[in-house]
Amino acid sequence: MEAYLPIAYLNDFIFCPRSIYFHQLYGRVEQRLYQCTDQTKGKAAHKAVDAGTYSTSKHVFQGMEVYSDTYRIGGKIDVFDSKKGELVERKKKIKVIYDGYIHQIYAQYHCLTEMGYTVQSLKFHSMDDNKNYPVKKPEDDPKRQLAFEQLLADMRTFDMSASFSANANKCKHCIYHNLCDASLC
Ligand code: SF4
Image: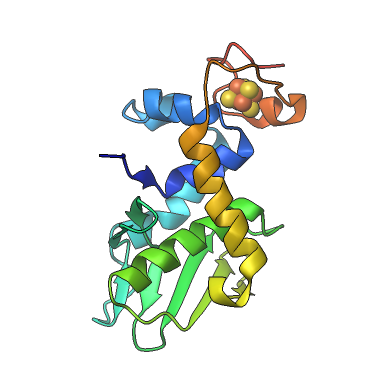
């Protein structure tokens, strides 16, 4: 049976396909050993959600496990308000809405929908400056939906042994640069 792709890998894969390998390899290691400051801060911002302390309302699901058989993906949502039908992905501070963010919230959307929930709207919430960024639903943005499907296909066919050109700027910001033999920094 084909393995499910963790939703958390989608953004990593866009950043650099090779980073998935290190993510898998070091995923169980104490994260403090290799996590950089920004990522640690981001994790802390998510802590309330992961611990289920963001809201006590029964209609607000936090850090819930979701999955989709159609796309063979699984992971956790951030916050879903089932009364409003609103799916929210919170980030510490959003400066740019990266494609990877959109793909991750699409993945959450598809999982929730397949599990029988009605999702009316999607948005990102930037916690530091309290800004919201609405996102069109996949059915209202066919181009992005196609890109999402292509990303999953690319992830499933990526060959770690194939020739690879690293991006020095990405390597500079990569938490795995000390471990990666393709690193340019
Ligand atoms: S060090 Fe560079 S090539 Fe290696 S995983 Fe990171 S971004 Fe990719």
